[in-house]
Length: 156
Image (cartoon, rainbow, N blue to C red; front, side):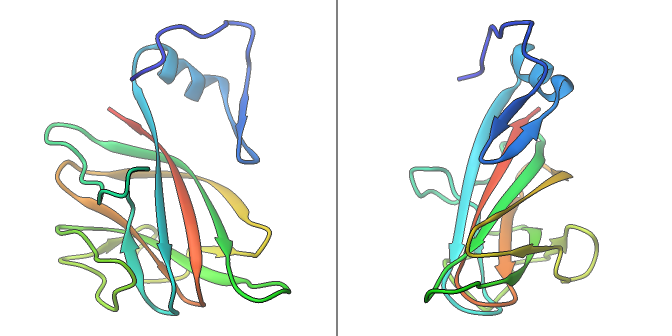
């Protein structure tokens, strides 16, 4: 459900250590739907679709665009620092949990399948400007080990 009122005195909003600007808050104020998607994988070089908080693979609705404004990633494992590379992409089909396949016709944020972000055990938040077209499935892939990501988005 979109936020329909927001105190005008708020100039920024911090979620998970990431600061959202007044312009991004204004999008919420105007009735645009905001969502947080989650993704996790257990093995290096594998990926998983972003999912809703109830565990369903997220597909951008017909006639809509997903606009991601931030990603927050953390590595998992034994004690100590776990820093892994993370790539974001979109696919024509859902990417099953912890699969070696990047999905159907994958297109990566920033171009080829490159490490776009680094995650760490303590977590790393990065502001981004990434759009995913209608009917596509956003996904993440880790170049290291077990990684979890939150994707902060708006639906236009």
